[in-house]
Length: 329
Image: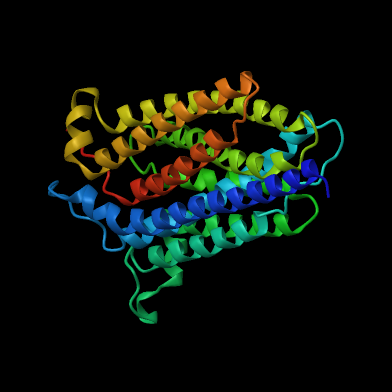
């Protein structure tokens, strides 16, 4: 073996070792977030506000976080097919799909949420506290059943050959979440429309980035940078839509004159403020990655950091749905 060839082998081994270390750190931080955000988040957000949390707030936050993460993963893989077709001149081997596993986790999480709804929005302590018939007798129960069935349908689509068909049941999951989040009597359709758009963009942004980062190493030549460029252009529009729908939704729930006070004095406002800070950090990372992409430099590192922060945004968003809604002062 020549000196150059030996150096290449050593460099390859070093790169693999570095990739393993980075992946380990990424997964470690994600696992910490998965456990700490639902466990400690409600207590920190509610401290000193005088508000009372729902009895199952931690369990609901954790289950909804798993469900939203599953939605992101599968939505990203559905979108990946379109992105790859425009970036690679010929078919390329895609990474092993995560969609069946994600859809199964989403189904189980939706079942757990349905059990809590059937027990009167409480964590059931015995079989007697669980009333399946209650699901069909309330709006929240019917929406919970819709989410269970939609995720089950998405799981079947993920197991089949035409995985893109999962887009329809996933859209039903987003629709159910949007309707569930807006029971208010005044223009609930507008709130649902805003949430549907917001959640759809978030799922595509986070899930698409995960799918793209898993695919780039498999693409030949300049197809990897082209794929990242196609994703970055679309992500810019998604971020704009997320910003607009998020601001309008906030102003619908918090009148403009009370926003500053509620962001610090209510649990919902505090978590919303934390989410806003995280999204601003993601925007900065995305801007940095785009500058590096235009300069022809490696963009994987800032993109991985962006993905990690996006994962925390998903967890914080799930916690936000479990907290008391802000008071319209």
